[in-house]
Amino acid sequence: MLLKNKKIDLSILFIMIIVLFIGMVSCSSGQVKSTAQKTEKFSWLSYEQALTKSKVENMPTLLYFYSNNCGWCQKMESENFGNKEIQDFLAKNFTSVRLNSDSSDIVTVDGEKMTERQLSTRVYEVRGYPSIWFLDNNNQQIANLPGYVPTDTFLSILHYIGEGFYKEYTFAEYMELQQKS
Image (tube, rainbow, N blue to C red; front, side):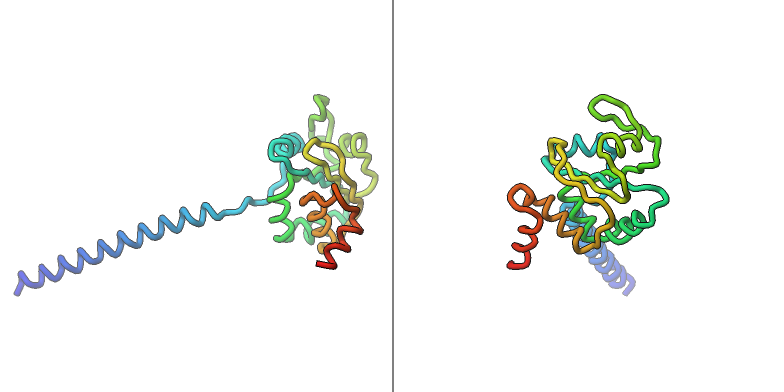
């Protein structure tokens, strides 16, 4: 009787080991799958990083200029840049830079060092906040978007620029095409 119980115990132990092994294999293959399906996460880059990545990956750049005490900037950040759909689209289609127009942080522009404040006022001539500039992959200015923009309009603008429609259509024409489809 004692020998029979040992056989049962060993059989149960063997089955448990097989079940654990199968579980470990399926878990690890699930991890591989989820890693492969991972999407790029939205993040702000430095000015220099964004311009370099834009050229290498052939994508436009979004420059977001803000000021510390700007209520509309806070609204833009919470409603637009805090929006998951916008973040996902930016991560896939743009290099994005957040520039504080009150900052003395140094950036390099064509070999010249200047503050973010100087970049804002001298290079992009920003006069009000928030303000967004879109650049192509050669760092040429595409368009300026001054002021706060509601989320749905902002997303349409991102698609217009990010998917290259600006090369063929005015924004009004693009919006008309979107309404027809």
